[in-house]
Length: 215
Ligand SMILES: NC(=O)c1ccc[n+]([C@@H]2O[C@H](COP(=O)([O-])OP(=O)(O)OC[C@H]3O[C@@H](n4cnc5c(N)ncnc54)[C@H](OP(=O)(O)O)[C@@H]3O)[C@@H](O)[C@H]2O)c1
Image 1 (cartoon, rainbow, N blue to C red):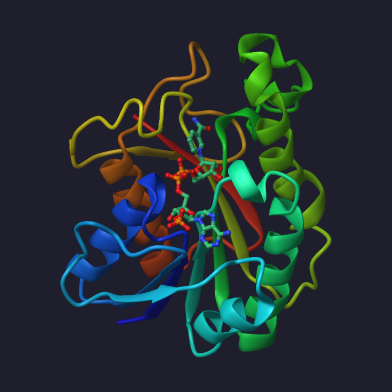
Image 2 (cartoon, protein in one colour; image 1 turned 60 degrees about the vertical axis):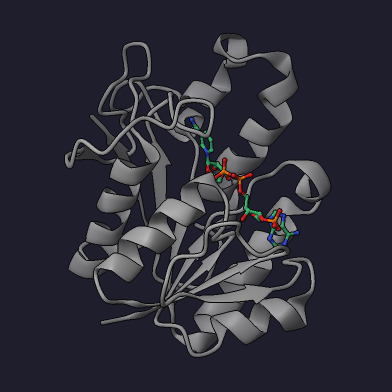
């Protein structure tokens, strides 16, 4: 059993991870500004703003694992990378492993090929800033953290999100930084992504690594 804090634990990805981890008997804390409409029994919900370091620190301290599931949108559009740098620093100080819910575009179509983010022609222009902010985490910010921080950046397949929630198939494929479904980007439901992510937490098989989950 691990003490797992999910930052953004009431969002699309975060709530699925919270439910999966709690269902397996982990001690889960979910952090967000508002309470969920359907709380998961046994989960501790803490309200706060991730831009407030004191609030963030209160839920990172004492955790074995921190999952970062915020989105670079809305009020976090300009501060997302700073908030994640702070989260990484706090996790490192707490000796907690850090799992980051990433984006598809930071993946590569083939080994050694440029990442999808290098050519965003496939994505609507209104999403370019948030795609670049998410990819910068694994390209620049996480590799720059001290070696003592154990981070895993977990990209989903392209079709992932509240607009395509999908269903639980109970399976997934795990890849490295090469998309397991490069052609068309593939898909993965939130619940199967959460299954794969909590498996990664429990197996503790990756260290300072970029991985991806798809069908
Ligand atoms: N295909 C793809 O590549 C793809 C698609 C979608 C998402 N993603 C990835 O998934 C990640 C999560 O996205 P999502 O769609 O699950 O996001 P989401 O549903 O918008 O959830 C965001 C979560 O963060 C919380 N939050 C927002 N601002 C906050 C703040 N200032 N302080 C504390 N909590 C805050 C929200 O709750 P409150 O509003 O109550 O605070 C909510 O719990 C993204 O960063 C992205 O990397 C990837």
